[in-house]
Amino acid sequence: DGGITQSPKYLFRKEGQNVTLSCEQNLNHDAMYWYRQDPGQGLRLIYYSQIVNDFQKGDIAEGYSVSREKKESFPLTVTSAQKNPTAFYLCASSNPIRWDGRNEKLLFGSGTQLSVL
Amino acid sequence: SQQGEEDPQALSIQEGENATMNCSYKTSINNLQWYRQNSGRGLVHLILIRSNEREKHSGRLRVTLDTSKKSSSLLITASRAADTASYFCATTGGTSYGKLTFGQGTILTVHP
Image (tube, rainbow over the protein chains, first blue to last red):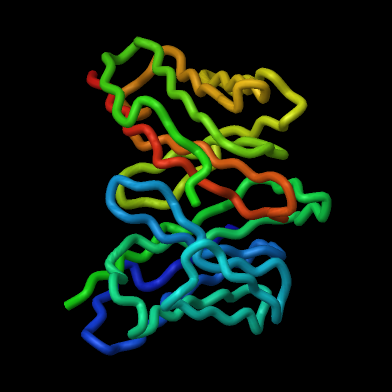
């Protein structure tokens, strides 16, 4: 079955540590996204990638980094510069990309809960 | 920035009743989507309505869009306890090329 896999489900970060959240999809989707969700809040876009080897900052990119070396994978690194990393992180993908700006639905992974020790 | 504002923030109803959630947005859009999220899980796409559409149905779901008022509503008819979840609207528009902007969501509780 095709889908999006996020791992781990729970992650703990120590002070000054970088941690990487994994997101893999086998849907052959071009676009992938990382969102952050704080308790009782909506989703805020961290980074997105429309094609391999290219990615763009979202609304809250500071303290985060990504790579898109393969179509299937879009890992998110939460760096030590992110001072308030505790949140629920959601990865999503979509296809096809409509270059007129229209976008079809996003498919989401099951999320990673990141907490600070 | 959060484009969508949802109303109410929380809604509590009895099984069998209808649930209506509203979403307002600020800028022009290409489409508006509704998603559902069960606690601690990812979001699931429910329905998409394009800017040139006014109403759309999918099973027990009915979505309306009023671009002149920059608002949308989601109606769930004959609600069930299993409909208990958070519901989010999301918009895409302009040159955003696939970026969705989400509202803060409505928490729906359906009591058996």
